[in-house]
Length: 202
Image: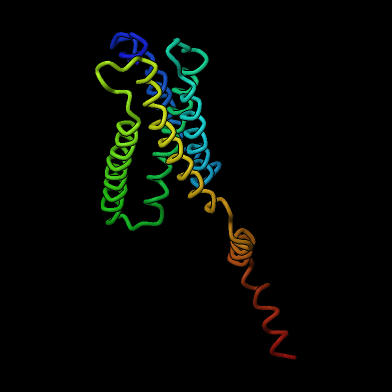
């Protein structure tokens, strides 16, 4: 945006600031959201927001449209990051032994870093192949060269959403089984023993 819209470094930083502020403000609330809705739903919602945010950012043009395009995109992407990354950490370490929590968390973060580097290379290759980056290229040509890269990022986010969707389907009978176990454990031992005695008499 600095080269195409003529913004200064400070203006560009302020344009991206809402995403960071949203992540910071929601960091203390994400635990309650996960407890209420579960990690699969939160992760899927985050990826959906990410897809919409990058798809909306494709509308960017040489005419600054901060309120209509840039700000909504930053808010959506910020909300997506606030939902997805903490939920992924919770899901990855859920049920893991305390002694292995550090190892699993390290594997997750390493996977995120390696995956991010790989997809960054793919996006950069797509942008470079699109052309429009020569010294004599017009601003519109440069912008058109960046659009395929934004589309690639949106497709990657869509792939993440599709991968998370099967996790939203709960196996049938899971909730019922847990209720049955809870009731049997809280039942009076005397009343539980009575049917057994009747069966022996019969």
